[in-house]
Figure 1 (cartoon, one colour):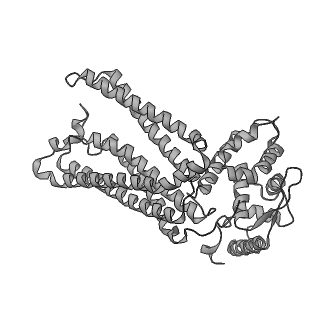
Figure 2 (spheres, rainbow over the protein chains, first blue to last red):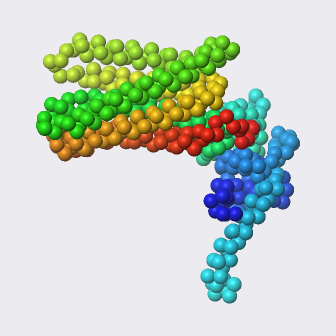
Figure 3 (tube, chains in turn green, blue):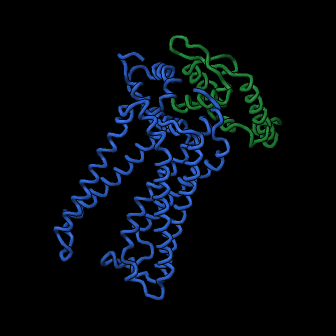
Length: 112
Length: 316
């Protein structure tokens, strides 16, 4: 996907939408579980406003969808469009990682 | 959220009602899970203030593309109305500041600042006509709304405006009466100067409340796509008028700075003559910020104008 066509918020590794999609990739989660999971795998503590702002934008774009509430907590799951978006973002991140790895000579153990 | 713990409900007031209806209870539960029943940390509160404000702007169609094009054009038009309010305040102060410029400017250098002033006055008059036309355009929809919903639906919105307009009127009449009582020969007493500043703040406050009330009322009234489109055209025309006012003020300033720089110093006793006095810089920045607001609104209207009447991209 060309850079200009990509939705906002999937351009940096620590962008809340990318973190949320990544967290939902292994199954539905509600807000608190999402925040906990993101804290664990990315070390990022999303503020309440940032988390629910990103959830609202992702749902608006059809990248995630809400499931019925369970004990006042609403789980969200990633849609097919969201999975495709996440896959494309990860491929792009991989390209950058590959170039950086190659240029720093990390695979040859120069800086390792 | 149960009544036993009303705290998160209070914090959610920053978010628009549609957002609270959609995410409110889930969000409250999230806050409870993360922070328990204690006080929310300041950082969390600030993030909610910021996020809630953004959501309000989105719901109002002022930023983003979450709502239908009609609402976005309406929001952009109201943004231009706010810009006009900023220009009213800055323009009134500018008019007062510059009222004696012909006395300080050599006669042979009058034509350019005089032409700039004429352009400013013409554009200000055009702006007033545009606002009246916008009001008349919305009037049938407003009357229809009052007929179907009754005055009671609007009174809570209109009450602060009514009170602030009365306060502004009383303050203005009081200050004029006091000024006339003091007379022109003596130096202005400190009390009168302070009261003048206070009255000015009351008038500015009334203008802000008035703009806010108009915005709230316009969002409640159902406008047809045709009316919305026409409001958009008026808003773009208003942006043009504001550009003329800004260009005129800038032309006057540059011309006076070149040909009569002592004009700026003569208004502030014992201060060195500067072509860029603080008051003019502040007024210029106010106008510039108003122009930026109007420009954003006009660009959004130009982009969305052909989409008015289309359905909403999402339905929460």
